[in-house]
Length: 100
Image (cartoon, rainbow, N blue to C red; front, side, top):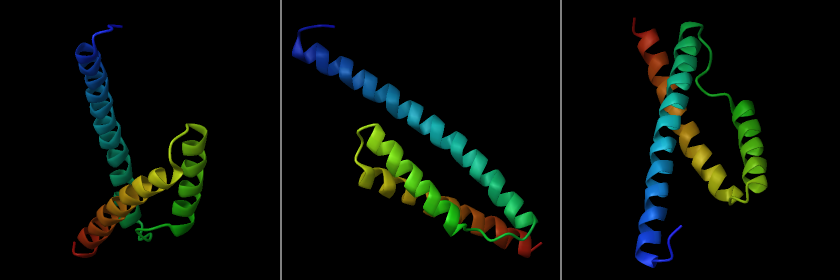
């Protein structure tokens, strides 16, 4: 680790860039799985949303965030954003299945 603050800043930013890339890849994998769930739900006429599961997931991620020393309100807001997008995809798959 360097003592030069400019070089240290560059090192930290490289790490941040690596984390950002990992997050994008992880989100892409997550959405591949949730899209498969959405297609399954549409095929078998299941509702696009599952409020009980969503509630359990929020509670679970809030706890994980607290354990990781991450703001649990931020973690919940982030998860809610993802859930909203997942439900949007599930609704689209359902609509597509209904119009076939």
